[in-house]
Length: 241
Ligand SMILES: Nc1ncnc2c1ncn2[C@@H]1O[C@H](COP(=O)(O)OP(=O)(O)OP(=O)(O)O)[C@@H](O)[C@H]1O
Image 1: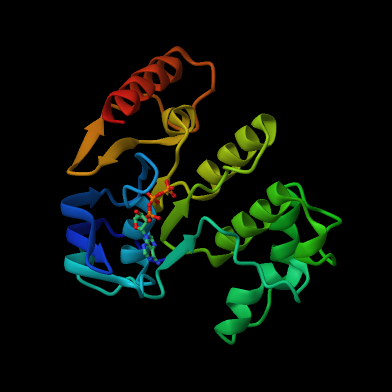
Image 2: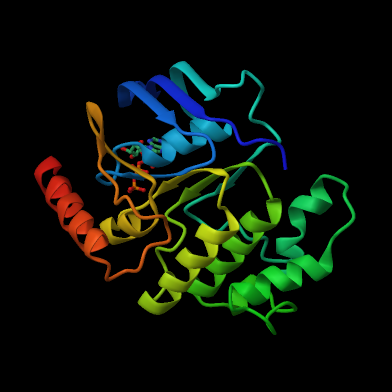
């Protein structure tokens, strides 16, 4: 894996003439996990899509990319809010899709291993339509991990999971993506408190950084610092609403 770069996004976004966000100035540290919270509709997914280069319908004024000056294309994996699984492919083939599209040899053993780590051993031959929402989300996570990119953008990656599975997947992702540049959109203050080295809140006219717990992620969900940060974030989100 090449060295993970830091990221920046400076500017504003409009969709069909309506402002999404204005005068944003975001810096994402290299090799660390940054969580981004904020009210529904404030533009978090739009921001991820700007960085990933996949926001067709959006007009951006400004610049977004990597601070090392090289294009992000080919170095970034985006796990979108919808799972984007191909319904006609098996789960295993969905996880291998990125390698196939790039003309690489499909590493079936690695795909099976990742599927087993997300708790889906035995599901490889099924089609996405035969899975629950939470299972589909874990396939999308497996596909994202399989991409093995230095920059990873996660859009509410654990939102469909039950509490225990969510905690396990948070631990798995934190370990698998350790040392990469991660920007993770979430609505869950407890999740940000467990995982974020840095935590930010996006609102209509500003981006605020909130102190993250000092202990290394993934932090225990009942750690004192995690509980205090969860409370602090919840209060700030209530005040921002
Ligand atoms: N294709 C589109 N056409 C028109 N408006 C859009 C389109 N996509 C997004 N928007 C609008 O852009 C704004 C930002 O959307 P975005 O999905 O980035 O928000 P978000 O903060 O990620 O929200 P959520 O937390 O609900 O996922 C919203 O007001 C949304 O209605």
